[in-house]
Image 1 (cartoon, rainbow, N blue to C red):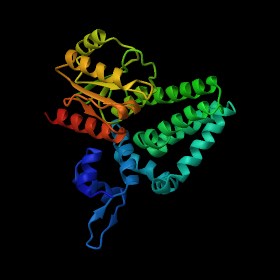
Image 2: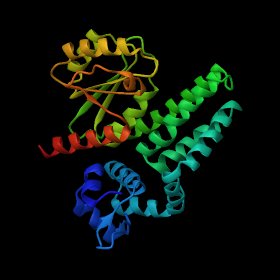
Image 3: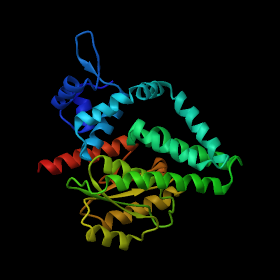
Length: 297
């Protein structure tokens, strides 16, 4: 549970704005302690991330909250899944089965609906990432063919590309460049993080995979980026990733460097100047903070 101050910081709006939204639109609807203090849930946080994303696109708050209320039954059903994850596991199993049966249109439709219902951060954290992990495990168990794994990856890329294109052009003063290290061709994680970054109000340039360091340096200067973000998959050997980070620190010395991905869990030596993110919520909060600070300055 979050206090109003903590929630305001996570969402990137003022506490007074949250109070006004509650008064005018009835949302968010926090619980109260015995002393009357507001307490907000993870569901409230997810909903407000979606609210700010839509407002940033130019939709009036009254219209946004009207849409939220219309989908309240769906939202309440999803709120139950935040506590035990049962619904998420059932949905993931259903989608993996659809992949196995070559019903990619079913998967595509479910993903598009889930992005709206859950908001981008929750969609990625509770569905997209776990789904792709489960698909990989199913392949390892011999339950899926390689083409099926490629198919669901293509669908996920397509769904995220639509979301990212829809949010493009809403820069709020900062620009982030995303890459994977040389030899790393798993770029789906970049598309996921791009969606998070754009939803938080920043511009994003995705360079894809296998970009040499000298070209990365040129790109950072050419696009005048504030941050270089690097994603490591679980397939990147730790010793190679650590060597790459040391070299990266030498060529990108005047910009922030962010790192993330499943491969970071195995890293032991990470330069102190680099920011490592454990999940998409960390990325969202950092970007939102930078975007707001840039706008105020």
